[in-house]
Length: 269
Length: 70
Image 1: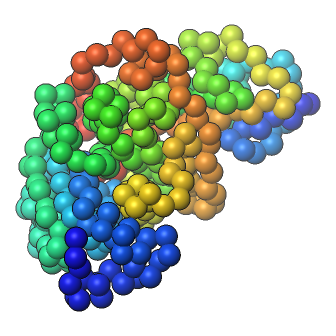
Image 2 (image 1 turned 30 degrees about the vertical axis):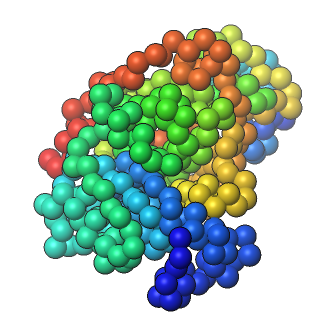
């Protein structure tokens, strides 16, 4: 890929980085990344990946922008209320960086469409708000051999892990979704808006590291932080031989649409 | 009293103590909300009550965090 003068200027702070350079920027520009959920996490991820010049950004979300989203979902603006989140996100990405090819899916990720959608991408970002889809993303990515970043936030806390083929997966750590309603989601328990930015930008950095091959990814380590104390921790986690999806004797052979509580499906009431 | 590490921080406990007792001591309201490692090994949920904690053990409570989108 030959960069024109504007692109060299636009990406100059990447190109200046010894570890990235023109070669690294080319890798970013050739990258195809799918963001699942254009919400609290997906918003900063999409903005930073767009700014970085990721060549293709796919965004899947079946929701529309709600006024209560704007406290943290920084890719959506006040006039976007009631617009589909994928359309709103696409418009901002196009304004920020016309180099980016944006592919939108105004839909929910399900067991029947997951593999078909993720197959075209180099890296997947989980920016979803519920456990059924988090486990679905994990299982689909493990099966398809796709690297992905898990992210979760709640109240003042955040956690993330990067999963590559063969490293500890989300299910290695968390086994199965908790009973519906046992664990509150942000729409029920609240979240400090900036937490979404803190965690989403960590996920975006992992994507750029993966695309450029720079540094050590957050694999086999779960990063957690609490914004009240600003304590960050990485906890070593191991690939679990008893894991139902990537263990020695996987019992999950088909993707699963776990049931979720109805209050998690509709947020606007 | 014996020292153990819970989520990276030293905690003094009276031994013997089982994992389920440690969960209660740490005010984990819903044990179904955590995944637990003792010395880097995951403990099956069904073994929370039979797992005994020893001095200097490192226990990590890993909480489910579901938010992100909405």
